[in-house]
Image 1 (tube, one colour):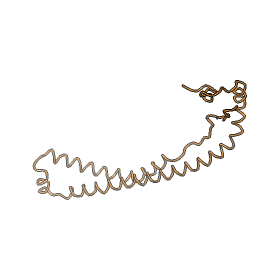
Image 2 (cartoon, rainbow, N blue to C red):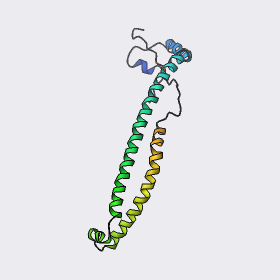
Image 3 (spheres, rainbow, N blue to C red):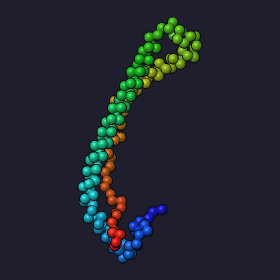
Image 4 (tube, rainbow, N blue to C red):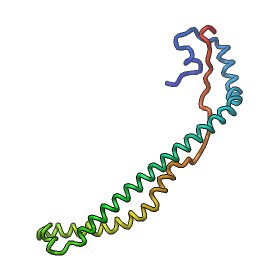
Length: 154
């Protein structure tokens, strides 16, 4: 349940007079306008810091994706080459006369060949796509609230 104006300030203490609450409410738009240049200046500092951290994170993620794809590529190339070089005798030794196993091996080899092509494409596109995800697309500094500190003694 949202707090009504002034209710958050009361919290069991002596109530703030209504005239003071009205004065604070009426001065709030002006106070925000006066604070806005300071808030924008501070916000720009935070924006720069956030953009730098996001760019660094994007670079780390892009490198990690490149490493994953390169590892997959090496693994598939090794597996594909090992099975591609098998002669009929070695295939029978490994898989027997099970036609289903041999058919699955052929399907795997076709998939590996296609996957090697897509990995090459992904090595060119995915790291950049990931870096782009960490690019700031919009910047906005907008006050969302205002807090007045009021002494307990009034």
